[in-house]
Length: 136
Ligand code: HEM
Image 1: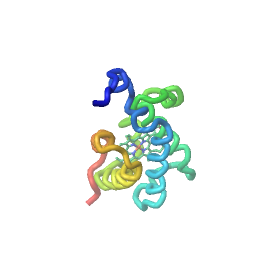
Image 2: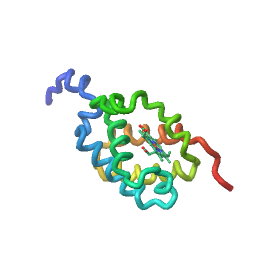
Image 3: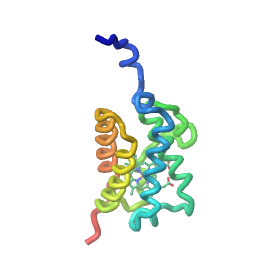
Image 4: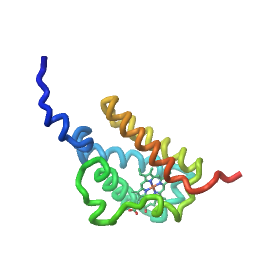
């Protein structure tokens, strides 16, 4: 039987386990490719260039999953619901956001347990961000 050291299992962060910064950069880059072509989401992003938004989401996710804490150094406490208040996040926006994230997560080709953990988080976080009823 292969011996697996306890500390390698218990001390590795999710961030490290899935491949560190490179993985999160790939995830968020693919996600924003989808957003850039989305007729509902694209107009919501205030800046012409999606690069800075891509950077913020990548840094946030890396920090959340146990990587470098650069997001906090640059942006302070995430307070994500508050930061989304200026944007109309209804069910349609939520669905569109998750659709692009689904593609991006799938393309990472993670081990199933990591994929599931990451996806569960995205589902919960996206639901938490809803701040408006659907337009009739
Ligand atoms: C549910 C649909 C969502 C929509 C329509 C949406 C839309 C937006 C928009 C328009 C921005 C401003 C772009 C910028 O300047 O950064 C933003 C920022 C951001 N979003 Fe979302 N978002 C959604 C869900 C989420 C979720 C689920 C997360 C986290 C897992 C997230 C994390 C962030 C972060 C970290 C920022 C930058 C915050 C900062 O200013 O530091 N968003 N989002």
